Image 1 (cartoon, helix red, strand yellow):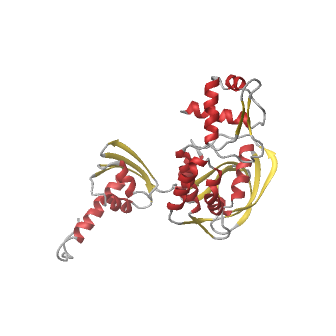
Image 2 (spheres, rainbow, N blue to C red; image 1 turned 120 degrees about the horizontal axis):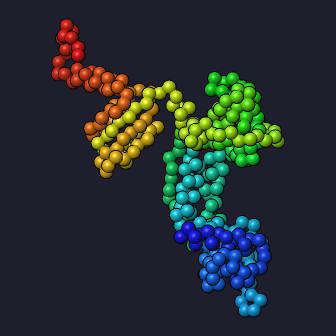
Image 3 (cartoon, one colour; image 1 turned 120 degrees about the vertical axis):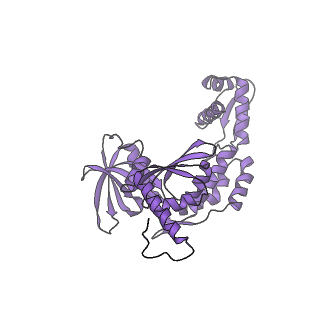
Length: 330
């Protein structure tokens, strides 16, 4: 399937040059036979691409002129995924000034079917009209800022911008942009801060007055396996690391901890290991207790001590009468 899709995209790329190609020429370029070329041309027509065919001696294939943006080459699953993805982004309600990138997603969400092949339009329209995503409030991020920083990172260009910190102080930052990361409804820029000589992460909703200086830099090795991994470590610095084995399926545990930043690895069909960083051991204990499943605290030892202390407190609270104040507590 992957080879067929690749060949179809290559065929489309040749035809979009506007040139005329004979069947034999296309077959040679695509390393296939004339019959396969004819089948692929028919598939392009099914997708809505107006391929003109001239049969017989001197025959050719050519893409009709005057189509600035032909229908996109999506299969059924890709079309549905695109519509759902735009819908989820469009459901992000901007907090603060400006409509943010969600407004652009909302506009695209309403017109994506116009760019799809005819055979997929009815299906995507049905998805678009019957699927809703619950609104989630997030800081507004300008689509132009995303695009500008992306272009600078791709070309390894120095960038400067005005930045407002969490405390409200404002200043100019000069950076080498590397990656933009979306995490917990927030957009972040990972960059090398030229003035501080270190890696930094910046909230995109606090960035404005972006200027691309025109000078370039030699890319540095990323400080982690990925920008997302670096950001995760930065956001969870100072929290407690906990590892727990739970006698419950990974999917069930993931549903209970869906708002918690954690890694869940299935050990077997009915058992999994949870690794997380938390501010409160007690919070995690209570959430795991709601699973109604046994669990073992692998580490740290402090977590086990806190669990025992909480258990003793709950046991005292469950007594039918008030305890004797003179009775020592265990």
